[in-house]
Length: 503
Image (cartoon, rainbow, N blue to C red):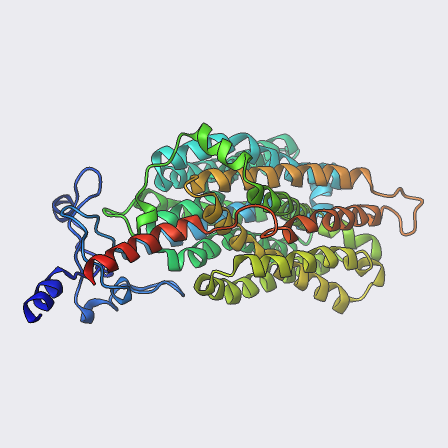
């Protein structure tokens, strides 16, 4: 028995959680062309040397797993993943700030460009449709070439688009067409970085840290919107201030984009079993999604609520100013909408990362969100700051908590469908709906003879009705369709198989 125990002990290895020396020679020695190598583990004293996201357990604390055969895959996480994650966060912030550059100061921008607030709204519509047009290329880039090329492409579009916008503001007279071209180029950048978080977290992070990694990067996008909502009204007090504001954003964006050329593409070895599989052809993946009831039951409310959130953010100033609120007031309301949502998501996402209670959270928050849109109908006419800010806070919190959880849940239940495909489909459909919702909302503006003139109450009623109609779809999750967490099962089965071999 002692000899058996000694032999068994010799077979046990631990996964290394600390980063290896990042040199080409070391990595080439550690890697084979298909990322297969002998599994090994660092000592316990080294297991804390790698920084981890909340909920991302050190690999050395996992079950001791003996290799079932020679040449087994080695799973470990790398410190360098944080560099790519931070750059992805910064790019998401700037692409969203670029989107909401002019919406928080729509009336002032309209005077500067000698046009109407409705024309300023079309800068947002062009941005949304640009996302949809570029989404297929973004999916191809992420699927075939990984996140590095996608991040570099987004940086290029951001830099060029921002400086073209600034050139439009410096023309005499200011060129609305030039700004629209720049805005569309910024819209081209967004699918590359907005669809990247699920792919990046799937490649670089362990299953216990993926929701948090996806949440951090995905929620950075609306944080950029919050900066726009909060800062732009203070930078643009008068119409001539539009040009300097555009310049400041272009400079910040350029500085932010430069590090993208140093972002690593993929780790030398996979971080988990689910990170090291061959995906089916795209056509097969699309058929898998099309026949998945669980996918559709969340896909419909997800794209509707994200679409409404984006159109809501774009039109918030025009919702409020007919009732006596200033652009600064609407900017603060937009900041509350986004910042409270970010804080709520930061609290809830790590908890869901550990518990994996996706459906419970979704089923609670979707009805809350639908009812909140209904109650918001009375917020502008109440002309009360407290009521307005409370409703914005609730809508923001519900939206932002659902966002990363929904994206990760899509990846779990649709496995082995590529995270890039499910993410691109969700975001592109949501952006298309956002553009449609903005157009519909403009058509529902009351005329100058209404009380108050040019109010958008009918647009708010439209949002509330559609939100309530799609809410039951999410409540049917678990009742209709297969809700197994397939990606999570892959890792669990491999750990269990290895455990049985060692017992």
